[in-house]
Image (cartoon, rainbow, N blue to C red; front, side):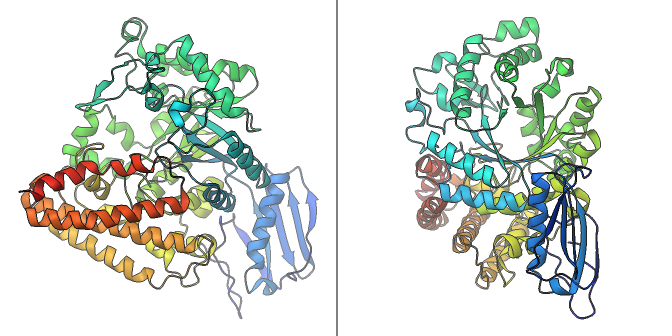
Length: 611
C-alpha cells in the first residue's frame, strides 16, 4: 500500500480500500462531524468524484449517484483515521473499468445461505464492484424441472427478488448468469431431458468416460435455453444477462458431427449461440457469453451483433503457465491431451484481447480468484492473473472486468479463501496503478475481518502461497487438492520431494499457531477462524498422503498398510468438520454430493490398509 505524507505529530493510516488515485494532504483537517457540501459535477468521469477536507469543512463533487456513493465511502474511511482532524485531504478518483463484476459459482454443490450472500455483498461494496453474477446450472428452482434441483437447496424466485433488492441498495446490479450450452449435465442426467444431449450416452475426454454435458445445437434447444433464461430473469431488474455457452466439449462428436464436418465447428457453435442471443438483444438486453470457443475461430469476429459481449477468461497467470511449459513434463502433456493451448495460456489475456480489439469487438476480461482445486487458494497466481487482466484490458480497450470464483469438484474450499482475491480484484479493476502493490493482509485485517491483532490476514496470505513449493508446477489446481481428489482432473505428476513436504508441514504448523493470536471482530470472524483451521487440517492430511505415496513411489493404494490405517482414522473427523463448516455458510443440498468426491481416495486407502 502507498503511504501518505507523514504529519509531524501523527501519521495518517494508509489502509484505504481501494487505494485512491494520487492525493494530496495538507496540515489541518475537518471536524469529524462536519456535514459535506455536495455538488453535482457532470464534468467528472463517470462514477468519479473529488473529495476535499480542510478546517473549512468537507466538499464532495460527484459525477453521478455512483460517484457520490464512492466519495462518501472514502470519507467514512478517512474519518476512521485517528489523525483525521490533523490532515486535510484532496482526492480525485474514478474507475479504470466502468463495469466491475464478481461471479460466484453456486452450481458446484455449494449454494450460499442468505446470510452468506449478505456477507458477499458487503465485501463487494467495499471493493467497489458494481455487478454481481451468481453462476447457475441446476441451482435455481425452475418451475418445470423439479427433478433437476430438488436435492440441491436451490435459490428460489423469492431469494432472487430479495437479493436483487439488497444489491440495488448497495449500488450493485444483480445479473443472471445461466449456462445454456455446455455444463448441462445436471439437466441431461434425467430421462425426460436426455434427448436434448449431443451425446445422450456420454462421451470420452482425457481417457475417461463422462456423462452428457452439452446440448445438441438445435433451434429446439435454443428455445429450451430461452425458457430457462426467461424464468430466471423475471425476478431481477437488470437488463444485462450472461448466457454462458462455454466448454461445449462434445460439440461435433455426436449428433452434430456431420453438420460440423460440413460447415465447421465455429459456424455451428455461433449459429446456436446467436439463436440464444437474438431474442434478448431484440428486447434491449446487453448479453455476455464466454469466449473460449469464439476466440479460436477468428472468422466469427464480424458476426458479433451489437449488444453481445464475448468474455475472455483465463485462470492461470502467465508466469505459472510458462513454468508448466518450460517443465514440459506430465502436467504439460496432460493438459495438451485435453486440448489446452499452453502457448496461449503463457500469453495471458494478450493474444485474445489483441485479436478482438483489432476486430473492433467489444469484450470483457475475466480472471479467476484461484480458490478452487486448492483448499488453501493459489493467491499469488490469482494476483498475477487479476493484474494481467487489468493491464491487458486497459491496453486493449476492454469494456468490463469480471472476477470469477468457481467451485470445481464440489467446492471444498471455504468461502473465506476467496475473500482476499475479491478485495484485490475489485481494487485493480477500480484503479490498477494505485492498487497493484496492495498490502492484502493489511486490507483483510482492517476492512474485512476487523482483526486488530493483524494475524488473520497474514495467515490467509501465507496459506495462499503454500502450493508454490509442492513439486512440479501445476495448472488450475494445487498438489494439496490433487492428493485429496486424485481422480478429478489431471493426475499429479509425482509426489513432491520430501524437503518440499517438510517445508509445507512447517508452514501449516506455523499458520495454526499464529491463528491462536488472531482476534477478528467481523460478524463471521469465528467462522473464518474455524474454516482456516479446518483448511489447515485438510492440507496437513494431504501432505501426509503425499508423503506416504512418495515412500512407495505409487498411488494411494500402494501405501504401507499401517500408514493407510492411520490416515483413515484421521479422515472421518476431517469429513465431519467439513460438513459442519459447510453448514455455517451454505445450504445442505449438494453437501452429500461434495463429500462423496473423496470416496476415491478413501477406497484407495482402504485397499492399502488391507495389505
